[in-house]
Image (tube, rainbow, N blue to C red):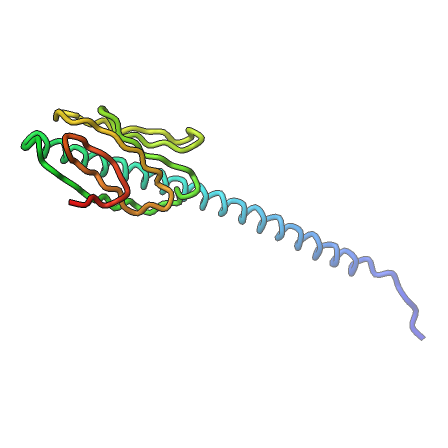
Length: 155
């Protein structure tokens, strides 16, 4: 008949397994948090770059509309601007046009920027567009007025 013996080596081995598992779990959790933060910061950077590209493209189109108005004050001009895709749908971002700049801002004023325009023509500038779900913005010159709009003009 065998007698039970105290085996402290086996208990130490099992405690080692538990600590190894917990250490691995800690490293995996830290890595997951790091990767998530990296993804979010990259997405934010891409969104800002896309919004900046959109602003520059619309500003350049407004300049071309002003140039057309300088050449012929009764000219009609329309240019579609395809917006870069971004995750800005939920940010309530608006773009608006004034006589001196194209402006871009979100609802919380977290992201706010402007692109100056020369306004060298005798035109008025106006228009507000909410960018949520919009793929194309139209820069339209008609009757001495340069506007931003979502709808394609009828001329």
